[in-house]
Image (tube, rainbow, N blue to C red):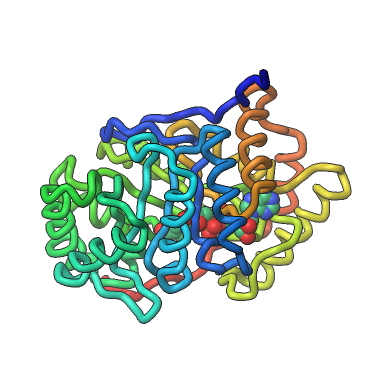
Amino acid sequence: MASSPAKVELRELGNTGLKLSCVGFGASPFGNVFGQVSDDDAITSVREAFRLGINYFDTSPYYGGTLSEKVLGKALKAVGVPRHEYIVSTKCGRYIDGFDFSADRVTRSIDESLARLQLDYVDILQCHDIEFGSLDQVVNETIPALQKLKEAGKIRFLGITGLPLEIFTYVLDRVPPGIVDVILSYCHYSINDSTLEDLLPYLKSKGVGIITASPLAMGLLTESGPPSWHPASPELKSACQAAAAYCKEKGKNISKLAMQYSLSNKDISSVLVGMNSVRQVEENVAAALDLETAGKDEETLSELEAILKPVKNQTWPSGIQQR
Ligand code: NAD
């Protein structure tokens, strides 16, 4: 009989009581944002993810204009794992036709998301990229609306996401403790940008669960490079491509090193990586398992950090100026 495969580590998410796989399944690729993904590839990727211990899946109505939620829902149904064995987060407030963080819109939004996902509830609902809305509206209107959805049993926990790190302190300093359960930060805990690190003690003091996304910097830290819509400067893109080429020459995979970099901080409960194939699922899980047994490849990482030094912590503008 075949032995069962090694599975990725589960980590507690703040005070939620949830235990998330440290490698989280980012389902934005199911919205075809990184190229076409067939339903078959989506289903086989999700099946393989479960087999290797991934229990956390993230999507949004924004990804592919609702396509990601529909395809994830179809894949979860096809694979048929019992609902209590996995964790799903989706988002509200950001849509293909714009932003709307009003109580009315986010309250309708969850029903639409649940229908597309073919689920009765989601574990986490997050206000999506709040730097594009009024942060005061998020504090005073959107979060209270999400609390009502919690009471109605449509969501178990609520959170906020976005790129600029100041949005997290702005909101968390203005809501009572225990109201915001989770924050999701992206592109700030990767080899080229690790600015989230300084905020971790604050986030822990607020008792929020910490999820990071885009360990591959939305494709910058891959051999094939980022999609055409990637917002990085030409300088940042070419430095990352030079780092990827250096790794390849050395017989190393930059995506593996990038995953391990993000996974190595255990204050981060889950690292969401966008995946669209069984091979990517297997590679990212292998990166996590190798990290547990062999640790980080410190030598190559410090070489990469040297290549990326001129662009270290360089980011790009996101959102509207409001303060
Ligand atoms: P990412 O850094 O995870 O990169 C994804 C890209 O890398 C895709 O093209 C994918 O096919 C490719 N890839 C994945 N594994 C690979 C491997 N082993 N080798 C080579 N290439 C590989 O960026 P992302 O998808 O934007 O982020 C991950 C997830 O986090 C998203 O799917 C989404 O769920 C979430 N996210 C949320 C927000 C937000 O809430 N504002 C922002 C960004 C990401």
